[in-house]
Amino acid sequence: MQITELAKLTEAQVRCGNGLMHTEILYAAASDLMSDVLTIHHDGMVLLTGLANMQTIRTAEMSDIHCVVLLRNKKATPEMVELAAEHNIILLESPFTMFKACGVLFNAGVQSVY
Image 1: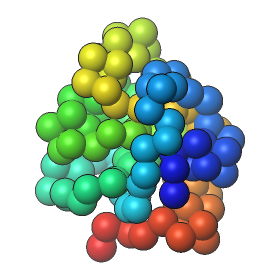
Image 2: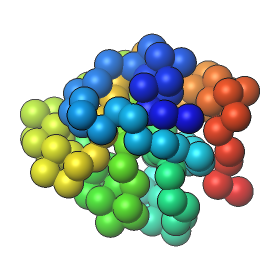
Image 3: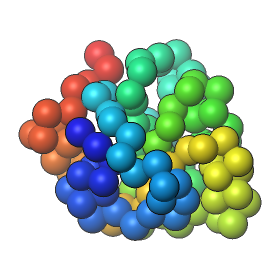
Image 4: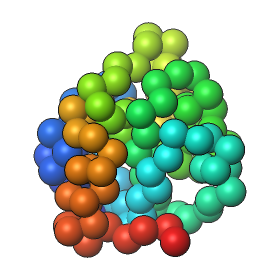
C-alpha cells in the first residue's frame, strides 16, 4: 500500500514528506514505547504512535522507519517536522485511536510485524 492510501484510510494530514507519499509500506507497528520500536526492523514499515515528541522522530530515524503517523489528534511540533524532513521521514497526523488505525490498516492488507 502506498502512503497516499494510508493517509486516506486514517484521515491523516501530511505534516512533512509530501513528495514521498508514493512510498510503499507492507508492515505496521503500533507503540508508544520507543524502546520497543527499537527492537523491530522490517523494510517498508510505518510507525503508529500517540507519542508526539522528538524521541519519536529520532527512534524512527535510528530504526530506518520512513513514515510516522501520530494518532489521537496529536500534533507535531515545528522541531519534529524539521527533524523528520531532514531525515526524509513522512510525518502524518490522524484523529484515529491506535486501535482504530490498526484495524483499518489490517483490514486493508497491511501486515503486523509480529
